[in-house]
Each structure stands twice: as structure tokens, then as C-alpha cells.
Image: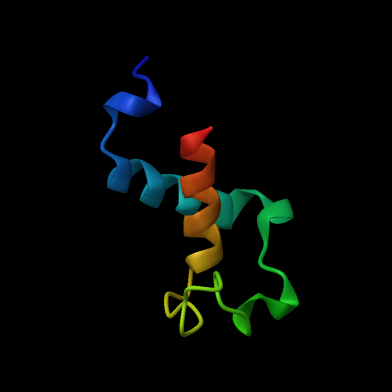
Length: 63
């Protein structure tokens, strides 16, 4: 079984984000998440509709 380091990051994150969106209800976006920036350095809110799931998938890949 391949480790996460050996799978291309973009493919893994995309597939994991889709899985989280469809199967894991605990990872749903919070109601206020569409109104806030991602950090103090950011000027605008995220424009991707699935930002929350992509971010969660990215964090899961890192740990």
C-alpha cells in the first residue's frame, strides 16, 4: 500500500476532499465560515465553493 508521501498531493487532496464531503458529516463547514478570511494576511474570503473540505483534506495529508 503506498504511503501518502508517494501519491501526488493534488490528486490525494482532491479525492480526500470529495470523500469528506460525501461521507463524513462531522467535517461540514460552520455557518460563519463563508464570511471570514483565512488569516490576517488574506484580503478576501476564499472563492472556492469547497474550500472547507479542501483545507481539511490538506491538513489530514500533513498529519
